[in-house]
Amino acid sequence: MRTKECSICETFFTTLYRIQYRQPKAWVFACESCLKEVKENNPFYRYGGTWKK
Image 1 (cartoon, one colour):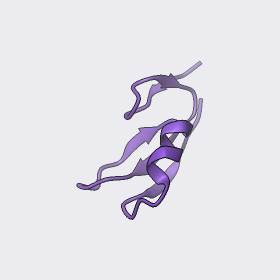
Image 2: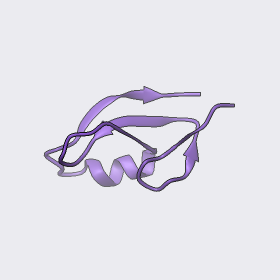
Image 3: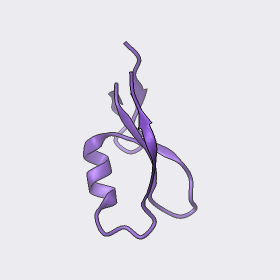
Image 4: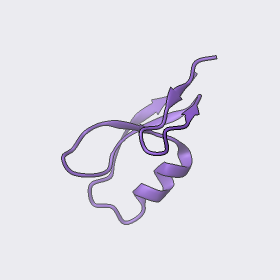
């Protein structure tokens, strides 16, 4: 089973979300719980796809 590390909490998951959430705009992979935290009321948030196992 493939896993990848969440760029925010540094835990490994089988499903991550490719997002931009701060300046400078860089794509990172985030788990679902970190995604929910950074997405809310964030003008820099941008979704770029889902990485799955």
